[in-house]
Length: 139
Image 1 (cartoon, rainbow, N blue to C red):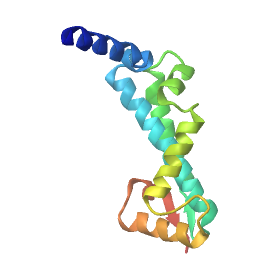
Image 2: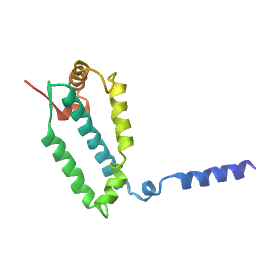
Image 3: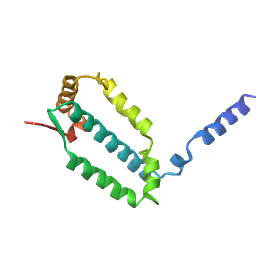
């Protein structure tokens, strides 16, 4: 009986795993994850820049990184749509949730004051968080 239940659980786990993930090579998964990260980085920097006049986004650096990832993806994926699906770029709800979680985990709510966003930007630059690479402090 236990063996049967274990077998059923194993079969269910195989069928409930998204087919797309299992069809991707390791390199494709890495490239898709890098694209998700750069999309999230861009959204984070845009929100900080919108809310805090002390910062600008380094759009050139963000675009260069995105272009490098896209160039790599062109050699790995059959189409740009397949790449976008693998990266989950079209899943606005998931991206929005990740963005909201990023700020909440750092004590900033979406409706927080510009002062709080500025403090977060300074803290990110101070600890040299990955996103800080794309934030430029205005003089």
